Image (cartoon, rainbow, N blue to C red):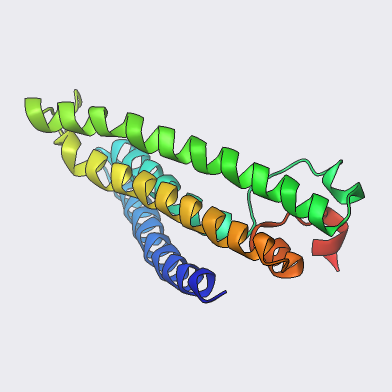
Length: 180
């Protein structure tokens, strides 16, 4: 399905960008470690790396979903016919989409409060929290939108009887399938 191809391309580009940010963060931490050996320190690398990890996690969820990387127990699914497998997959996607939407909705009040109060981190860096929570919130919204769009695309494939394509889009693959 064309929509899923577009979503995968967009998420691969985002994953590369997030990977570059993680690489930059690792380099920053490494430089701080080296500078400590020389009697100096940037300070705050633990705080900054924590922020980067939170942002990377929220943005990485959509990529992981589209690459079928989320863990799922498929004991019943693996013993089902194609339609049954698709229905299990669709149920899993509905639950995942619902969870992502709830997290995105619950994340907004956190960011809104930080914006309203001009909240700063209670750390020596005194980081404006909205600078961190904005991208973090956007990542959760992106994941929720991707999960809902993927679920709708898979539902369309199932309704059309295109079970193999639906399984490719939202299926769970047993460990032995991924090893081969």
